[in-house]
Image 1 (tube, rainbow, N blue to C red):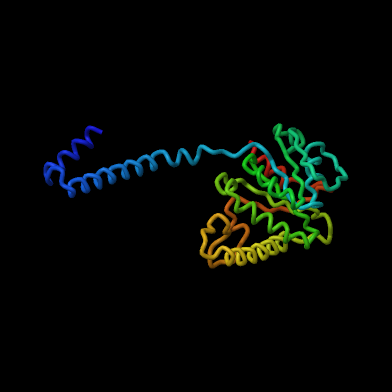
Image 2: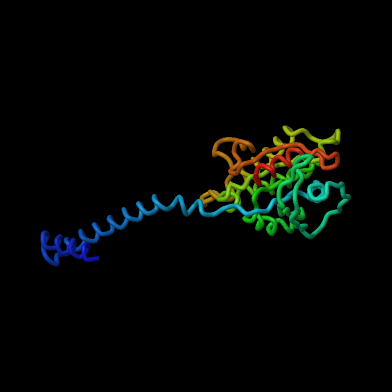
Length: 256
């Protein structure tokens, strides 16, 4: 503060002691110096502060009711097929995941969260604890793809996912059925539904700051794999057969 006081006294001496012009000029110089110091501090430590937040350790299983989340959970834990029904309670357990004939990783804490719409906000709260998300989709149920798109829109505009860059695997289940839709079909349907939501929400939020709730690139139709704000992969699986290699590879990728 002595140096600033000396600078003030020097400027006042040159411009006229006690003059209003000298005082204004002095404060402008002081504010400029403070601004430059703040910029230097932000450049030096801002990146470190942003990187200090890390993802959690959960694997989250999300998806609509009947998509096969619970069946996948028990396949991963017990290597058994379980006939399950829709539940209102999450299933949470830590166990080793078998990723090969003689190889396991973990223990990993995995949460199978109910797909009921009324619990969606609570499910989204778990995202900050996630290492990765496996989103199970019933590829045999075209009517549910709109619900899938709506939930994906919510997830991909969540602050936690944007900041943590939480990786997401879209696992299209029931590929063993002849009536199951192809990967291309499911992706295009999700993109079409999200595009409609983008248009309607953009109109609703016109004139407001909608950066946190806008997906994709302005002026371009939404493309899931190109415009997702977080890392995303898509695969086909069958919990029934079982054919779970893409899920096992995804989990192994993020825990080893």
